[in-house]
Image (cartoon, rainbow, N blue to C red; front, side):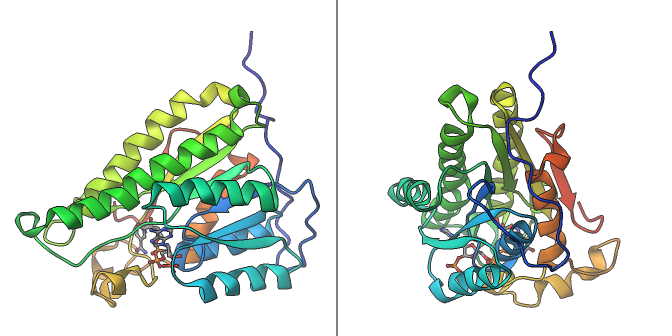
Length: 274
Ligand code: NAP
């Protein structure tokens, strides 16, 4: 007996190449954490262009989130911004409940929100720094994915879906003298992706990860190294940093039915540096 066909989830509309999108009440819905800036914002816009309705999470920068929503609406798409800090358990529960009420049941979820810290050696990292890193990058990702599973899993009456976790090339490089704590948090995400994918594979849910390399976003400035992606570009076999849109392409492909037989894998999007 073959397992059920991979048709639990809605198929997003084909790419529209800049044409106005035309969402309907049956458009699939994706929630993207940290969707207001950088890779998350690029993923929100690309997902909308491919027919997804988009719930855009942010934590501080309401204007940036509103801009992403406006850009999607200008294309004729459906989007709404939701404030929540994924490092706070109560915020995560509120986020999912607000998305349920305002937009409906998700069939796509992207664990994108993540933070770095300033460059430091391991022996100089405080407990408070480690706790923040693991709370946002690891506990937040676990808790968000758990709530996504409760909405998607056929075990819970859901229609299935796809979860994409943002890891990092740091997970396999280790980031010595920079942020081993961040690298280790992303190593945890790689293992989480593998285990969760196997756990929910018969419940209509695919779970995959992406390991971006040096991508041109504000995250480097938040770690005190605004030019980091350019400065380290000579370590990249392709000799250049990547763009948020190049990562978004991989995220939205993994969300889509085009990746219907892909689960439990983590894809490098790193120009060969991983
Ligand atoms: P970014 O430019 O710093 O943007 C971060 C986004 O996450 C913002 O929308 C921010 O919202 C949101 N955010 C931050 N903390 C949050 C929290 N506690 N709760 C909810 N949202 C939060 O980051 P990025 O470079 O696009 O990175 C996105 C993901 O890719 C991260 O997981 C990162 O680790 C991973 N990654 C990035 C690179 C890279 O080179 N850029 C490389 C490897 C992996 P506000 O604007 O409201 O603060």
